[in-house]
Length: 231
Image 1 (cartoon, one colour):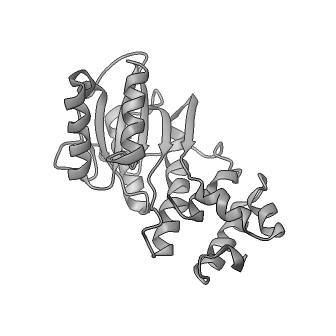
Image 2 (spheres, helix red, strand yellow):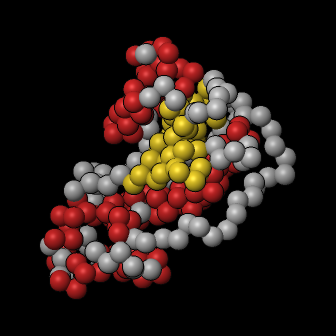
């Protein structure tokens, strides 16, 4: 189960329609197994591919989501977003072993959602691989998260809250018009909010809250013990 910060993003209304994407490098090279980060796997060509990026895809809910997506439709291709290439490759091999036909629909994308640079490099790898003339992604599943086992609140917020924002803002320009973004949270967020003051409950449930207001709250959280009573 993830701590309350995993639920902070759930009610935030963000405008992703502004701006255009430009590749961060003027030198485009084919991704290879030795480039980090990059995409590894067998590239497929086709008219109706629905390519989905899933973060934290090497285990748990992320891996299960990847399997479910592959089972759902033969048109679905999955980019396994993983922080460590070795673990990501192990997850890819596990899925390919389970169903050999999936191998051509799986690729590994190295990405650490807690790092601005890593997320930007991952985006560039997708652009190098697929281009932008046709939006390369149908969907993004923000699954990467840190659970209650971590006592490092800064790391938890960086992944569970800021990581979602990094991925959304960086990859939204690569989504096709009918594409979707899915944010995975847990019951910890609503449970925490239910124990907060009436004022903070209204704050968390306000769909029109601005990012600046949320950022101010995050700064306050860094100075507190994570206890609903503090709110």
